[in-house]
Length: 113
Image (cartoon, rainbow, N blue to C red; front, side, top):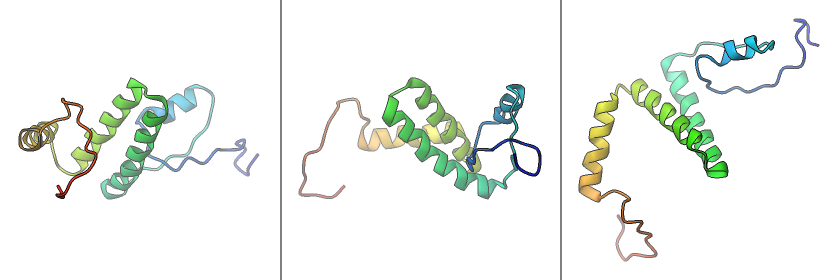
């Protein structure tokens, strides 16, 4: 035990969902959290996005896709971009450059894009 009388704590140092501390405490555990500024949390969420994409790559879970969307939604909010605006940007890019509906895989090209 450490000097606070708490058993060995596992370091996470990552952004978590709002209810995670309560879930830990309700399960009989302890945790330490701190509230970050928007700028600090944006950096933490950008790391979290990489983590969530990696988790999806490993297990292909639809739940991981939902986690990715949750992180992306909060990142866009922190960048002052509404979900509607993000969707407009996505649609514009899709109209200009196409979507991913045809399952195309580029092997090589003489032009950069």
